[in-house]
Length: 162
Length: 338
View: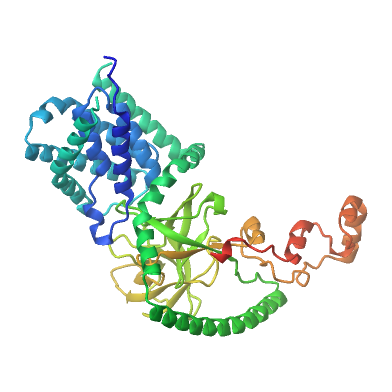
């Protein structure tokens, strides 16, 4: 039990990289295909280490995202907390899934995240209702998931994150 | 504590924070302070663009440089010639306006900035610039590029600021047609194409395709007479109460990186309107206060006389400090050399 918290920096680093990728400028036509890196990294850590990365961590991660985006504080935090909650309640099943099945779950979760933030932004008058093309971001996230999963698992094992 | 309770607690917390953030402004300070943390992320994210710019700058042939230099010299010459004309015109304009006791035009100072990021949120058009509170950026400042008006600052962070573009659907720009002075409000379009729509323009108004729209300065946010957009389509539909007019913004919203922040002179900023920029001789358009009243005022408040060596320029309507600020030369701005 004395080694319970090990490799916190790996988790923080992975989130930091996710934030970087989230704000890296994209060309206009690819805007809708932007994968939701932060949500994906969060899903991975919640799934792999549910006792360390939970709803609270997800909430904080979302708050940082709000600060970065300049959106209403608490908007991404709420969406990510709900994503973390669903992942937590599914995590044992998720671990058993094949990568294709996992991708399907990620598609649903990231889609939910995008939809929730979109609704909240409309409610808070930070954006106006447009078409639903932004949901393509969920598709690209699901597409990237298997590679990201392998990469993060290697990192977790290599650095002995517990 | 069970999972459901925890998620419920965080949902409530989020809603509370969102409510506080949207209704009150004490979270603005938190946001501002935490801006110190987010700045490095944006700085890093912008690195590829900066490196590619640097490579463009460094690996360029000697011949190209000479050619570009020549072209720039030529452009500068033309620009300076126009500037000379403009200076004459501006002075004349101000003299005429002073005769009419009308408010004078606006020039203002300029701070160079760079766009370092674009908001990824669908349905919004915002950009992040590399100037913040430490550079003296203020809320509501206008952003220009070489071709026209781009937007206004909506959030100031320590080293960066968010700018809402005029093509954002929640943004309205007060404009007027340059040809005939017809006024309208140009709203950002809701569609995917970044363009402007003129709202509530009657069918009878005289606006044609190709008209230049300039800022009218009526919202007291943007300076007057900066080019905003060009009218691209005018549809008179009898089924609709107003004409449907679309315009293409002149600023290069999605291709330019170099932009300018317009600093209105302090005088305008504190009065909140475009009255009397610093170089206007305000001694000429003083309100006509009868001399008896002035003398009365003076005798009523002797301490003001001590403050001011010229008794005839004291009047309660025009307080002294702003006048002195008007006459005094502007301090040189340090930000312009970039």
